[in-house]
Image (cartoon, rainbow, N blue to C red; front, side):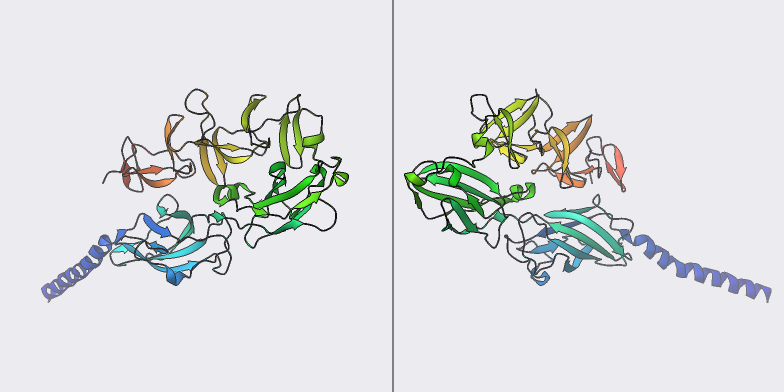
Length: 408
């Protein structure tokens, strides 16, 4: 009897052991999805357009509107606009969307651990945030590339009936609210007003000679973001007005930039100019003043923000000073050449950057890269927030060599 009980106990133990093997084996076979890549694209959306519906997006391939994974471990199962699809787009706006990823086989693949910019790559857009729901679902919030476009031209450009020189125009449906306005006498430009935040201007102080006057007005970018993604509209031309000799202006009321006898830095409204003792102004050129580089346009206006000169791009702060080295704009890092002997001082650097014995990489727009990035066919990892390339280490289980390359 004792021998029979012992035999039953052994058989029961073997049964439990045998039953547990498939479960353990199954658990061990589940593979962690350690990184995610999403390909996104939005058909040409211009200022004033609304966003296409989620149903118009392809989740399997890149065609017009698309959001897809191109990976056999997970797939895109749902899309939801965070930005309202009834909202008219403006230049520089980055539409935001929530993407649902689902493991293709939850018995074989699983989302585990944290997901952030270092292991979530959005090709054609920008990663914002992510969160998991269990091990089979990952939600990723992303932004599409900024909206680009050309502003609409102002409407109804004409002279007011009362007096001389009162120019006015109507704001277009899709504009920046800023305008360039040029006054002409015949075919000669008499006065330029740039980036004016108004829909009227009094040109009479500049009508100092008898003749036929007209003006042109166009919509222009105003902010740094608008400068980067928006283009000037076409000119809108006014009708003509004749000012007889007995009605010409005596010049009173002109801007200080014209009438002042001051020299050096002169401010006119929100714009700075630099005047020489002989009455001329720095125009369409660089100048190093008190060991700081400044850039002036063809009208003598000191430039700020992003500016392209020749084949190079530069950045000038709100005081007009040209920046050098690392600086942050719109939550992105850029590197402007600090050297006076190697390359062009202050020019925006793209590609590989050597800094303090570390390597960094800036894309074609000059933006410092973070997380996993493929460059010239090789995969590299750049520490988020700091940007330097990882070498001779392991990132989330993936080893990178002395050149920083992850090799399969």
